Amino acid sequence: MFVAADLPTTGTQPDLVRDLIDVIRTESLAVGDRLPSIRALAERFGVTGSTIRDAQIQLQTMGMIKIVPRSGAVVRSVNLAPMVDAMAETLNSALSQAEPRLFHLLDARQLIEVECATEAARRRRTEDLLPIREALNETIATVKTLGRNANAQACAAHFDADMRFHLAIADLAGNPVLTTMLRSVLELLKPYLVRIPWTLKRQQVTTNAHKAMFESLKSGDVDKVRDCMNEHTELARDSLLKQAWSSTVSAP
Image: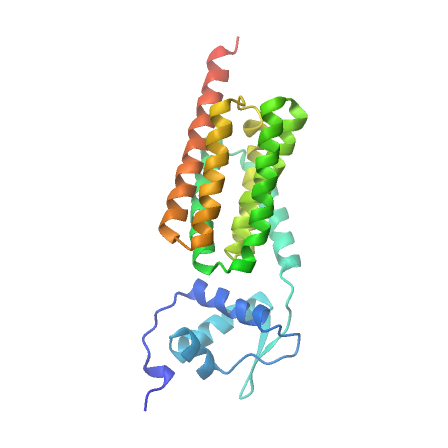
């Protein structure tokens, strides 16, 4: 007889933790509701029962479920916001004290965004793309405004729209910790980003890159999404470092 215990362990621990959180969310489980049995979850995700138990222990440590002996796991909390908010405060405080160099922030941004975009492409459903589509339309509108008048207000409006686009992709990846980290890094990069000269070439490159990312996400092309985000963040990195170098050289 074929049982889940006979299956090889194919999922990684972080993946399974996210999968179990998705079960709670997609099945609209409330506090006190019981999760599906270990056997059912093992069969669903193609892993062993012991692997599911390990992931449930992680969720219990996070405060999301309670494991009841001989009864199963029940939902303890469906709200990650307090945990994420506390982590955001700690991260922002740590970053401000560390005074990271520009290239450290750019490296962190690229690592986070490429992985988030890749995971978003794997997990995406058509209905999940609406926030990204709306953010894309907003960035295109602000780009047009910048083309007419690249003043400080227009630059700030574009940055905010651009940030929403990138955070919407990160949200789709399903990891609020990574989204929080990205938001903190982007906020620290904002003073540098708004100082990059707004040229027609930059307008075209930014718009085309965002459109290509969205279309790749819509089609579920994981490799293309990864390549698009990697190229986009690499170009931003080069522009920012060039701008910082020019400012240093021209300083009296």
